[in-house]
Image (tube, rainbow, N blue to C red; front, side):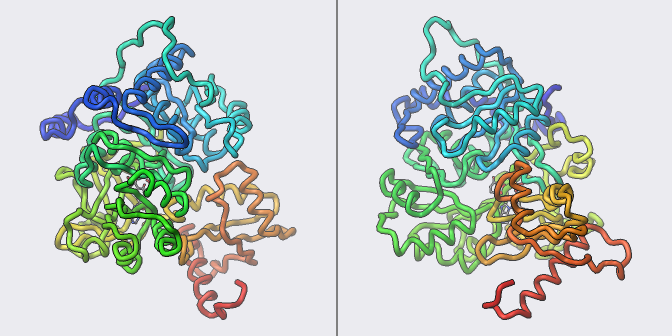
Length: 542
Ligand code: AMP
Ligand code: DBH
């Protein structure tokens, strides 16, 4: 199946003419950085420090290895790695060989990986080191048994670090700038995660422009505290934006303050990115941890809504500027600007990257709403996809006839053109920036022999922003909450998808209303629980 991601010809021509798309591919971008500053440090992680030249050498060795295995340009390869330097060896190696990475998150497990293998028709699966606490090999064996097209499991430890002289020269990089460079993962607001095809042209534009907005240059040092396979730390401006600017990427194995603060001091980190609950954790920890954070100039916060109260504490406590980032793997990214007034920075989620990002904010009937009124956000532009990969049904729902992506977000736009996120139109749970589809979890719960019906809803949570709660109607036998949680884990789902709370109910008390939609049902259940929580003594067990 050809990988396609197409803008109408006249729009594509406009994006090229405006200088957004510069006909550059990932291998060319790396080659230019190596030409310019081969000896500067590109990647720091674990015990490794790689210069740009060493990164390219390793990527070429990986590319040669992939070609030797018989993988051919255009084939898809699932990449399942944490924040380790080899991530870059693998993805730049895949780009060099014209192969298409599919980015899995470290938390993903059998159910998600099998789904990606199936949807992308992947030929290979690259897994983390054998020394990792998590047993990638056992997972890969299960995935392979369920994925007939998957020909190769590639263990990261087995990749060569230099090209074997006998192997001869690498062929020329086969990709064109308008080709799909990789498949990114959507948060999955309805059902399972979808695959997002991003081209060299559009993605490089998004992180090049992001790097400019964030003032990155050769001296910038970016700390990747979030998992780099996620779109935010990957590209807003993230690790790729930093490499594009010729700076240094420092990989943190964990976002916990003790680990991250030590790296900030040691590597003189200038910029990093967090989701709101982690920003809160850092604020709490800063006074108790002895580390010099004075090199840190900018903390980006995004992925979920940051409250103004927490936003206001960042500069006084951490001594750096805040930037709010509201983005999505499908494309559109908004930033508050470095020179914006403090009030805009703390109360809005920014404005788009590009003058050619087209935004519509509309009511339920599709009519534009006035300024400062909430409405559905639709968008199209030079780095927002026109379709998901291999999803004909979802595409009809998610895109308008004239190519606008329905983000599913409810936003307001201020007179200055800044967006303020109000919430979601659909039922998904944004748990500390990790998106969970209610429908996906309900389907797994319904498969349990003791479950008659299930509804999964989001509940406001002081720390996580939102947590998940599953309402269950049992058959004769009442399952214990712990059994249902174990069930979700055993079904091979990522741990963040396990419901935080399980409430057994006799019925959904919806008969009076007659037939109601799942959405209305979830809203009614959420309201009931919220009322109960308000009425109970805060000290009591729920
Ligand atoms: P994903 O589908 O995983 O790429 O997640 C994108 C979604 O995350 C957006 O459509 C928003 O719902 C949410 N999101 C991202 N950044 C923010 C933010 N700064 N404030 C509120 N919601 C956000
Ligand atoms: O949540 C996201 O997906 C997100 C947040 C900020 C994103 O994809 C991005 C910036 O690029």
